[in-house]
Length: 611
Ligand SMILES: Nc1nc2c(ncn2[C@@H]2O[C@H](COP(=O)(O)OP(=O)(O)OP(=O)(O)O)[C@@H](O)[C@H]2O)c(=O)[nH]1
Image (cartoon, rainbow, N blue to C red; front, top):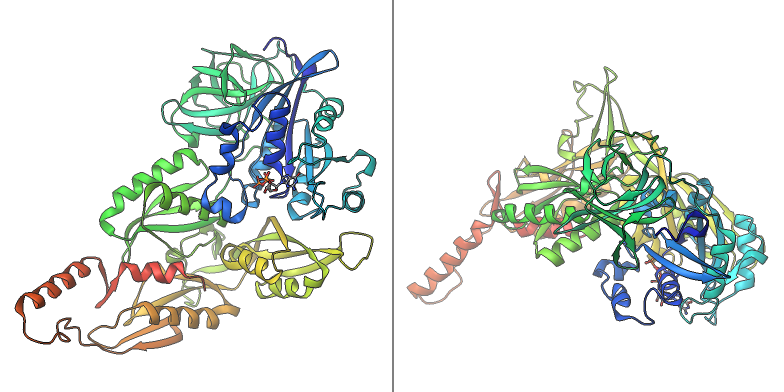
């Protein structure tokens, strides 16, 4: 690694809207530099390995970082591609990992043009002072309009069309140019070997045998096997047991020098110890940590319960194992009188939650019930204290005047939607029905042509986004809208807890936090859903939705005779007995809510159908 001092190193990432060809370009760069063989099955497998949810949504959740060696002029360069996850939920991680680079390739699909995440990643890179190289991909497509899109990039980003590199990552056109401009335009990293060791942690993964593997960028000093290091954030100490570069698989080296990017294994047991954005230094030689570090925070919470309550320990074990590889999931135990023992999980966003659920189901065969997602609400009490509540069960009854609540606030986001102008009305309506405020729009391109596109921005409660917003956005724009959001703090809101009562008894697992304007609609819809899935009982069961003491909606389940043998003709004793045994088995999975028997599956049906 001594052959690669800072001046021949380039650290860059590829930033793009989903599906604009990031992974394809990364593969092509690795091929062109001989890091992987052309059409090497091992690398392409990454595409095939995608999780079902990733394929369905057309995104990659876990990114790839790799080093390449490329000869240019009379020098050999070490090019480090630092990859960033490609979805809004991970925006925070994206912006952290950009701190490990000096430049970024802003990749835009030449047939689709600038999309919502092209904007957000552009600004993230710009804010970090990175050199941005505009690249138009997919110029091989008949629908590609490189000139039009380059003009669009000029009006949106102020990019000179002459600087735009036009490529086809799929057919390999222009890849040499990309390598050339990376070397020519991106500044080399700074950092001296005599400085105290300072390593920036920008990604991590989990290995069953070696524990956490961290990806680091050396900002100063040198790192070797056996070095004793410590984390600025957790203050925990470690000894480096293995290190090297990603070439593209882990390739051990003796040292990592300033400007270089590589992996380290240091007996870190828990993935929660590796914080993206953390700074590592030599024990006893403290350094100034990288600025602005704060750990990722969960924004969407849900309870997870086994369908069969006997499976709790198995479920908990599976969740534990999964969180080893996904450090951003928060886990707490939770118990519900209706669903028994379970876990409350915190996710970065709703996609993150879907991915986790899918992995739980696919990899661990877990049959789980997930409660409706909620966001962390802020409760300001009369004495001025503030608490964050993300579990509806803990939400105070704001209709009760003896409860000391001064104000409830909810997290809001600034949403940006990019869409062809013909869908403007639909999109405004969508924002409006999801309690959007400050809805605003402007034309993206100066051309004013018929197929001009619009960027619409609005402040929308996060709680509205985590349920059905994304699906509705896609269906109401025929798939044309792209969407992104960023945190916009907290705002006061008129929210209350809605409970559902069976035979007068509240079912804790079904409690929701609902905005005043939606109480009637939500109450009615959920009561209807419950009515459909709850089996009839021996007595009449009222199903009610209530806010405080006020009943919002009601349906009544008629009574039923429950003798399962009643319909069987003839008096065959054994047959009767068999049915009674079956009924008993079924009862094992029943939950009693008050006097009402509820099969656990009913909860699954209620909570898995979106309202
Ligand atoms: N015609 C054409 N298709 C391309 C080109 N580059 C990528 N694609 C296709 O575009 C789709 C998305 O490419 P990916 O490389 O997976 O996109 P991505 O940006 O990595 O997607 P995420 O990682 O999920 O954000 C794939 O079907 C690619 O085959 C190109 O230059 N031309």
